[in-house]
Length: 108
Length: 118
Image (tube, rainbow over all chains, first blue to last red; front, side, top):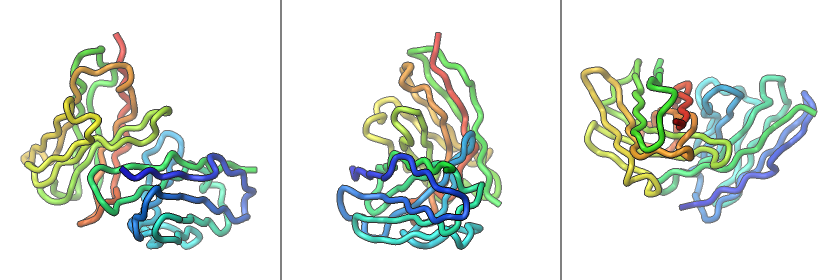
């Protein structure tokens, strides 16, 4: 099973600023990586798949990049509704499925 | 649009069987892969298993001996049964749909909190 490591565990950023979240895989997953956003009391929501393709309805301020073992989720100008926990998930060889441990994006 | 809704008891006794149902609207469970995922503060998001075309199932090896996922196409819902539960199985349980021919989870239910306690 592929192990995903997300960093940092917590990221403090001011509204309007840029946030960069990292996800590293224990082995190559090519571009088969998804990002999810989870707010308190809600289910995860798909943001990005294929490492860089935004899911339906996701604002353009969210962007994903990377391939192989290193991936980045960037939120270009943080809005108040963006403060949440973000998870990455590889899907190059499934099942089983695994998720990163998450990065909590909090308001500075 | 596709919607999923979990239902079932919120409290289950240790050693008993946890049973949850996911009712789907906006899509047929005869197509796509339908999954169960759970979340705990300690272990994070953990995939439990999926069902495909009503008959094909795959389970997380760590839970395989205790898990059964079934589908009822007449009611357009699928279910999860987890036997011999312990406190470690207390979690929020989500049902989700995988994207078409892909391995990411495109649609999720709102989640169902299940507590294992006597």
